[in-house]
Structures are given as C-alpha cells and as structure tokens.
Image 1: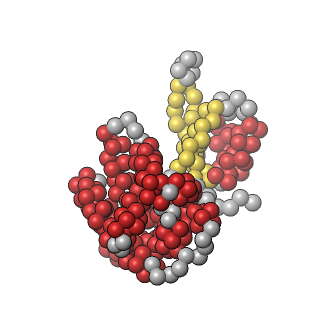
Image 2: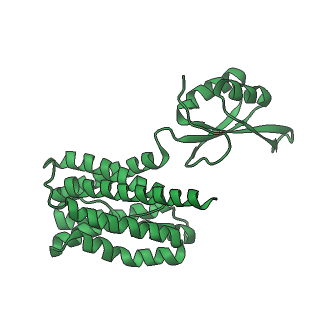
Length: 285
C-alpha cells in the first residue's frame, strides 16, 4: 500500500476516533451523568467513583483503564492499544469540556433513551475504526479465547454486576434506567458498526442451481460463487451457491429462489464486513 494512502487512512481513522469520543462525551455529560444514569463497563465504574469521591470523571476514566490497556497491549496488539489510548484520552478531555453544560432534560426516561442513542453512535464509530473505550471489552476478548463464553456473554455478566452496584450508589430506579440506556446503546452500536444496510451471506443448495445463479446475477446484479458439494445421504454431487446481498434484498432473493425451486435449501447469515470483489451496496428499485 502506498505511503500516502496509508497516511490518509491513519488520519481518517484517528479523526473518526476523535469524533466518536466527542459524541460519546456529549451523551454522557449532557444526558446520563446529570441524571445519575450510568453506562456499563469502565465508564460506569468511573461515573460511580467520581460521584462518591467528588473528583473529576476524567481522572477515573484514565486510571481504571490503565491496567486493561496494558493487558490489551500485551495480548491483542500495538495498533489496537494506540487507538484505544487515543480514544480514552479524547473522551477524558471532552468530558471535562461538556461538564459545565447543564443537562438537557430531567426526565429520566428521555435521558436514558437519548443518552443511550448518542453513546451508541460514539462507541460504534470508535469500535468500527479499531479502538475501544472500555477495558471490560478487552477482558471479554481474552476470556473468549480461553473459555467457552462468548464476548457478549462476558460483557453482559460484567455489566450486570456494575449496574447492580449503581443501584447501591444511585438507587434502584437509576439502575433500571441505566439498564435501559445500556440496552439502547448496545443496539445502536450494532447499527453503527454494521450499518442500516448490513450485508448478508447466502448459501443455496438446489438441483436448479444454474438457473438460480443466472437469476441472481441478472435480477439482483449480484455475483455468485459456485462450490462443489456432495449429499451426505444420497452421495449425489451438487452445486452450492454462495452470494452476498444486502439486508434490503433478502425478501426479493427469497421470492426469486422460491419461484425457481420451492424445495431449495437456503441459509442466511450476517456479514460484518465485505472487502474486495465487486460487491457494492445499492438501493433496490
């Protein structure tokens, strides 16, 4: 990759990390913190520590994350660690900038909903471009490699303890609103990372594979890869079709396949990233 292109890519990445931290800090200081509603993970711990000690939130955002960042450097890699440090420092700075700004609402439900949405956008941008704001994610990634638990399951268990602690510090009504904000943020993170028009991988097994492949290319404009397979029971050779489409094209794809072969076996899975090839997202007409 040319040096100029690499440099532009790095500039873009750190710019997005910077913007993501601003968005996250705004959601935190303008909606959640003034209403004693917390996010999960290290940020939630930092909010509670700041409330109990009276010290600035930024101090705890940095201090609590230090051991996790070191662990990430040793176990995950240098690029991820640098991006994470940059995002955490940016968040710490902007949380101080937004601190004097009064909260926009005293309604706990509105604060939880809008705070969760804004936090989700900020975190989604940061994660999408290779960084992290939360040391618990690093622990979850490492535990995923060493146990039967998934990253999501580990994060959920950790955050249940943190949100329970929020009930002791701020009251159980705040803890429940914190759970609402956390749930909304997690959904918005997924949307921000994957996009509203996320991709789907489709595998099709059919005796009319050639006709289906032609229809996919002609009517959906999607490339198709033909794989050679064999029926486990019959031992007959079969052509297996593999294609990547957008979520918006799924209904049309199902109708197309059913029109040709109602008995076709079809599986559809989420795809988080598509690189190379001729795949381009497009609107359906």
